[in-house]
Image (cartoon, rainbow, N blue to C red; front, side, top):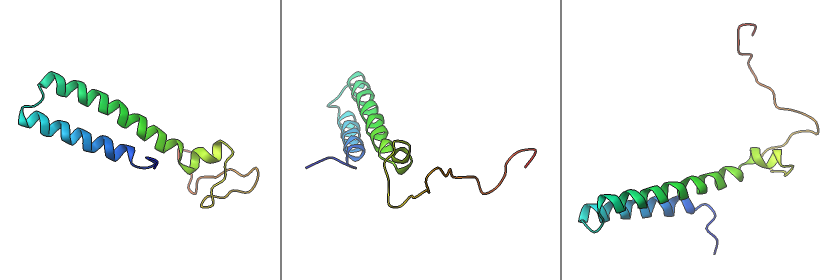
Length: 86
């Protein structure tokens, strides 16, 4: 069993449980802040792992994605020009 796509949800559930524990008086405010700080870093790490798997990063790394195709040497261009000279 892998945790692909589930790490951010697990982090959010644990944060909700920590909030519940604070409301019930099982955690002090200082303990709650430490737990949320750790969970925030875990959530950001999980988010970064998800972004690294995105199609844009796969194309930059040389991987191919069926949903995104470019001809060799082609670069995507903007549909509309933006700026003073556009």
